[in-house]
Length: 506
Image 1 (cartoon, one colour):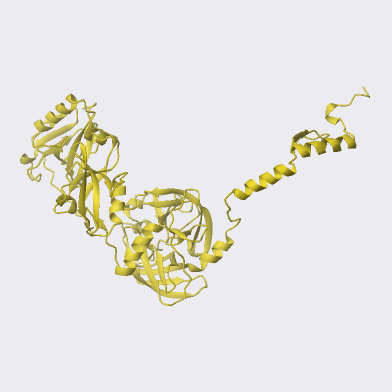
Image 2 (image 1 turned 60 degrees about the vertical axis):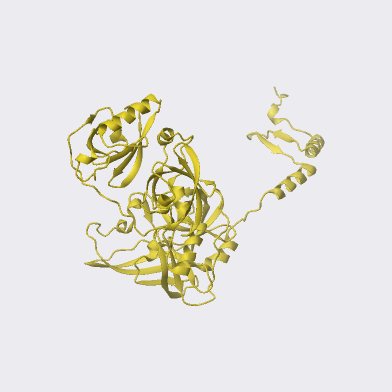
């Protein structure tokens, strides 16, 4: 056994090893080696020709910065810390928590940045901190509306440590943007991006989290077009760069140093950054800030319709090929839409030839246009497409919702739908219109689809109804025609809207 040599310990002569190594190097071959008492491993030999090919391929790859220091040095001087003071009464219903400053749609899910710290007593001297950035050399700067809203005093601290007083030029609560002005000149400023960022692009957030001015964080664009329930013009860029309270109003930059968005909200179950932040896109900022600078306020285009999404059931009941566009619940009297002949039950499918995905997109696109703009709307009307031309009006400051009294009347049972109906002419407060829901089965189909006692059914299947018999006839005709759902136009305390009830369970 002394002459036995284990295969794993076989030794090559120096001459044979050198010849073998030279041959494999020339071929660019991969060799498997087993060293004494070591785990086997692979070694890869790259020949000169192959190495040159790899180098050429590497040169074709898009170049990206190794670090962000050069970009930060370029843009950070334009970013400021914003500090405000507000004297306001205490609202005991909210206590002293930050949520009293939040819009209702965000109270449960989103915690905005730069929220004020409450004081004591019957009044609060509220101190709020946020961020902002210069967009001109003569001192115009952008921040969030919720940072400076109702502020009696606004001060900014620039990157060089100097403190300046600032004046609020104008605010736009609908997009949560504000324009402020600092007296002076030769301020460093940054540019709003012209291009839309791609998902996966690098971004930098610069701001004043927790009062730590000049903080820089990095991440990527995680998503675009986010609707977070803040308002009708939600179109946020989602980023994963860490942002926290105090970053609000600060910029998010691309790798060219352009501002792609203004940080405004975070999703935060814990109150701190979890890598989900939302920024207002640069194109929205441009539109709003230009109007605030020129006029101190923002005016938006308006066609004057109540709209709602097109669900698959609604699309089926109307004969649409797909669930897209914005369903007109009701045109407002004397509005541009009403004057142009748009009716309840129409679906707006395009604006100036560009398709409309849903109701929210229609609201955003019309809202970005100036009053007086001529537009062409694609409309699906009674099973055919048509084009409607109109001139945009000015969006009113407030929309008033009408309420109605709820008075029960003699029931007319529609057990399969879970509805009890009565003619509107016999129910006080219904103005003699439609059919009133006087009772509701909480486990019925209608309740599942949002019907409430006191709702007034104005028409069913596109035809006006004045008594329960009309509703039953429309249901029977729909089943006879093989429809899977039937469209109800309903007036409730929140306004007029459409509901598609499935017929399979009716």
